[in-house]
Length: 312
Ligand SMILES: [Zn+2]
Image (cartoon, rainbow, N blue to C red; front, top):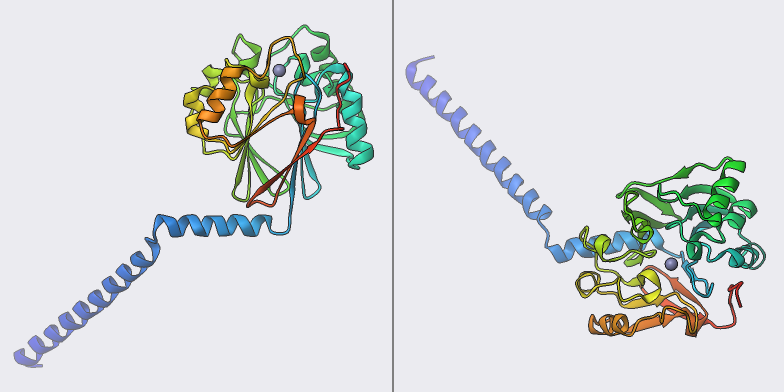
């Protein structure tokens, strides 16, 4: 090969390499263009994925009227969660309703938000009457009888009591739950409350136990659709700052009529309204409140006659 031919060959190779590089780079930009879809598009895709996840499936959230206390039952696709079980005399009524009326045999996730009677008073009966999957409760012991009863019956049935970490996730059917706060070391029992965010399709629920402002300020919160208002509507929880972060559309307050604490506090109601919350439901007025969700929208129904208040 003479020199001229050699140069021609080298030049041709360089040209081929350049063309290949050009084509490859162009492809890269094409891919990049495809990948960098708008935020809106990404959100739409996410919503579509969420819709597919919950297609043809309804989520039921019962805020059971146990008078001055909390008891929330969640069901989707034959999986269940019970957050608290009211006061001691309420347990048997809650248990009977779940077994006889709803045909429930197993509680996949039993939550005792914290060791106060108005939350775990009826939990001992639930442990006795149902198969229990996972049992979450903060690691903060108490001398009171309802707490020691819960421990006793859990031991008898060899159910482990687990104190979940913040960030722990689990599913109830197609609903995804996450532990948002909990502080085993807090002196105030209310601040040990296990707080759970539940996502179902496009809908977000927040179950707050009796959390107070210290825990509200301990983290960032998502935009929420349905809020179980903390501590029965006390003004010492649910600050304006917290409400501005979560901006709930529906708020449920669980308390009894003419209770000794004047719940729900007027100032709390004012803050809720000011934050733009359109629908506020109080179990004292509405009885048991059932929210049914298809993942896109929520339907609220008051079941006025349905009360589980054993103190009545
Ligand atoms: Zn309480």
